[in-house]
Image (cartoon, rainbow, N blue to C red; front, top):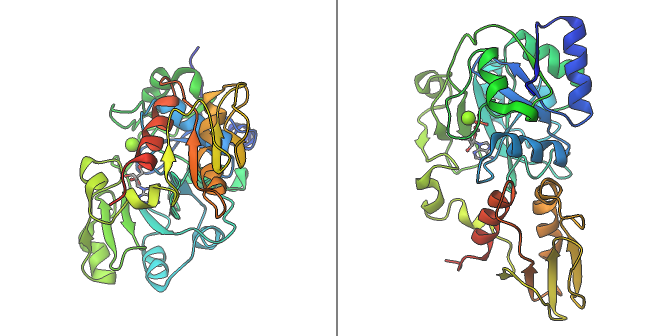
Length: 321
Ligand code: AMP
Ligand code: MG
């Protein structure tokens, strides 16, 4: 079954917003490319995005907001952020900033990091949808992982199938390339991905950008001191555990969790991988606490979202530098 494609009208936009508030996924036009949107504050909706895209890793997603005031509810704002947003928003520039304490956006949207990418898109349909949904919308490009980003509504549905409930057809995307991503959490503003906002225009406002590898590219995984450490809990992690000791915290999966751990959290007692993905980062953070010697993780099946879950767990368990 492929998703319904609707012209953007007040009615179809209201329907799309209601679907997003219900945790379903909607594809919608932005000025860059079509986005696969879900409620950024809903762990399950964000897990569904990764599931629909079929990506074997969790990379952080951009949370789309109406404007700078909306962004400031979720991230720690700065003078540089203000200068960039005042010039480029709404538009094709995403800013990576520290998550605010108590940030309502799903940790899965941040792929477990303490940072969040935010963007206010300029496309009128995206703006109308964000206003109607009345919450941040996580939206990577609406394509299967490893295929080209869609710049027309008819590119979306065949690729994503059941994953997407509705496609809003806003015609071809005017910019047609992804947003520029600038990380403002580094010692110097860092260009993570070139895109619709030019490096020259950004540098004219805030000075020279450092060039850094985007998360999810091979270089980023090995960039010294950069990401690997953010992804790892401070406690040692033991994978494929089928038994536990009393000083361990257990990250369980399925109905047959061994007993006797200091603390047990179950990713999904029903063995549902989307539920497990939704819980992964929040539960890892809870288990990573004083009084627990190490974290034991039960085996997770290596299919569907299990691939991305296991990728992240393997990195959490990898020897520390
Ligand atoms: P897409 O969702 O396909 O537009 O891609 C999002 C891009 O933004 C990816 O290149 C991510 O690596 C980058 N990104 C999103 N959030 C963050 C973050 N918190 N830290 C660093 N990069 C991010
Ligand atoms: Mg993409």
